[in-house]
Image (tube, rainbow, N blue to C red; front, side):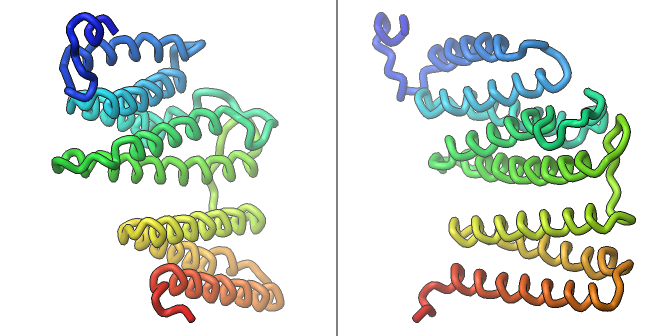
Length: 254
């Protein structure tokens, strides 16, 4: 504020002094957020700080703010997605769904997606175009991880989280249904935004889901249940085909 009033510095100028002052101020604000500055709270603090820097970049378009903000969000993603110890931060409780996975992974995913949206309008350089795509990708991956972690937690027994994709029909079908719904969401987003990579990712996930369904889920079913499952798969494929044609080729309607 002092720089703007006394030095007549315009925020839109991208002045480095404004960028540093704003970045340092947001750093201390984000440090207030963690009640317990360890484990997942460190990750959440970095995710919030990264999003705040990207939002500040919209006001003070200094390239350093975008790079540091994207880096902090990427580090937050790595800590949750590529760190096996994160699942041992807290013992499992009897509370399903409304647990620490939800706020740790959920808030970080929202920060990634919101950060991507905040800077997607800037396309002046290669880095400017890559950053939102990277953050959208990381946000989608982390959301998918959260979906699988919540399913695993719901069906796990004992104090530790256990991932297993065979031996329990209810759990196996829950994974398959969740993956199919997530694939449909990717398809819709990809078609709506006209982004081929997202659309292809949705198709690939749907194919993986169908492969899992045929190879693993249906292996232990009786003949009558298999017939019902095949009918369900046929319905899913018909709906997917209809949605694909409906959104991908709107000019052919009517």
